[in-house]
Length: 332
Image (tube, rainbow, N blue to C red; front, side):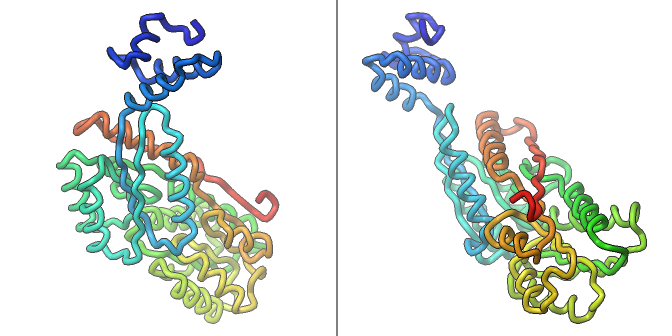
């Protein structure tokens, strides 16, 4: 047999009777397609009917931000690639990132979904929403930024400590000499941003103590504030050697650099390869970019959510720490 299964197994697939594992059904379907089997339509129908079906909800940040649109596209594509099950990916964006709004939308989205993937700041209200959902048997996955340091909430993303230290390594080796370093952070309640900054500082304490790290300025995850904080740094520190954008607001930081006339005059490290950062790398406003591998992140999230949904309560924790991508003007 082309599918390397028994005639009885093929008959069960065709008849839709008896239990046949999804991978075996996929193998039978692939063999039928390869030999041009006349009953391929029936096999397609049986395979589709036998696939497990899940609805996964995803709560992401503002729809105006390119990174979250790119992440949403990657999640939709990953759902379509799942072979052993059918995924209905319901994706919602939040303009209001307050803990109250985030928690309320998590609970509402969880009513109709088998599992949730969220990007959120650590806050008691968010924690309460997660606990309520998990008590209902709805697994919650934190994407991009961890919601628990102890594995109580599933996580798919980067090792933010390594990200921060890698950003520091780049600044250290790209600066012509020791100088002042500005740091922009969106919100310290995002665990990834807190660890980005901690890793950044730890590198300089260990390897380059002659640099002066200024106190971080918060952008509150907004373009306008990020631009204002960048212009303030440049105005108050004419000798600024580098800028590290450790969280949200990269578009505002780039706008502030260009408006000040200092673009290209200092080392700038930021996050995520997208149209705006690609252009900034090319015109030298941005020096170095650390980026999530979105396709791998989305695939890992889907696989983990399926596993958690199948396992049910007590199925253990799922953590997938992904390798990050590095870009300069020479490799985009």
